[in-house]
Amino acid sequence: MKVLALNASPLMEKGNTALLLSPFLDGLREEGCEVDLVYTCKLRVKPCLGDTGCWTRTPGKCVQDDDVRMLLPKF
Image 1 (cartoon, helix red, strand yellow):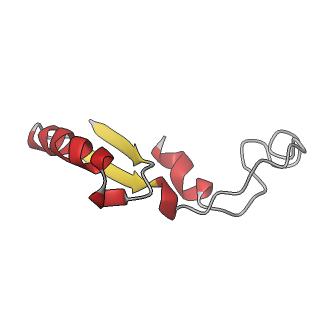
Image 2: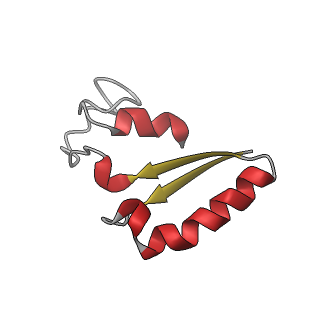
Image 3: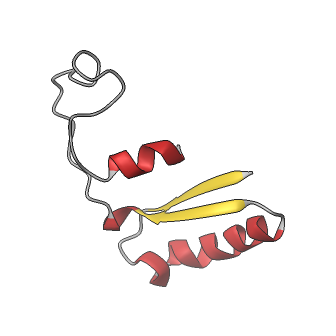
């Protein structure tokens, strides 16, 4: 099983979110899960342009060149 964990804390691995998330992810790894942890504050994500280009010009692909391109396949 693959697990994608998103940590949105600006403190990343030093915050309370990581304090709770780390043992949980460690347990998943022990059970054989493939865990991918992403810190959202490190991502460069642009807001939607709302021009529906992802529907008409390039179906299924956003025209923005940002980190969502790397993240979408993980979903």
